[in-house]
Amino acid sequence: MAALLLPFFILAAIGLAAMLAIHVSALGGFVWPFDHYFKLIAPGAFVVFLPAVLVMNRLTRDFKQKDLWRAALRGCPPWMRHAFYVVFGYACVGFFAFPFVFGGGMDTPANQARSMSGVLLIFYLTPVVVLYSAMHAETANRVRRCLNGHRISPLAKYCEECGAPADERVPANSSSL
Image (cartoon, rainbow, N blue to C red; front, side, top):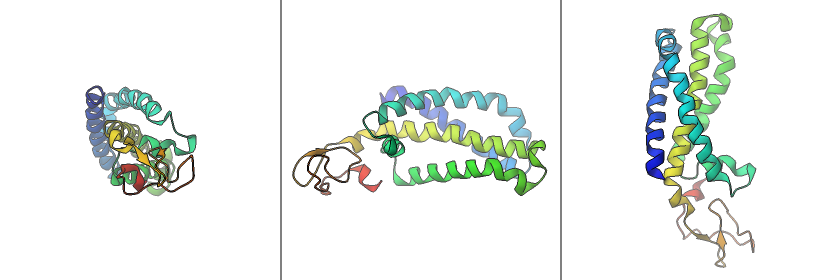
């Protein structure tokens, strides 16, 4: 499955790097890259976002809704999960804040470029982290057991059967979630 996901992961990573460069230039008030490359980069976000959604459904199908993102990102290292949450928050706040911070409202091309490139960062970053997680989820999925020997899920801190804590001697990537 990793061989199928790798091309989409590479496309998403390239798109993320390009969108980050465009966003940084838009923050500086230089909107030409955004205007010029928007027709290429915006549709590319959806090309990589659709496989990420399908993979995320597969990654999270055995978990509760409240653990959706923890389950989807269980194959990612902690720094990647934290970066995802920070960029997601930055883009959401920035979408509404940029017109006020830089002045001129959403009528100015610079504020439109800042806000839209921030949103497109999410549409490229989400596939990067979800596809990375899917390619590395096997380490998080290895069999974990409670202190009484029962099998527990990758995200569980306590046994669903007896309530005993997870045996931390068994290494699991998800224990740092």
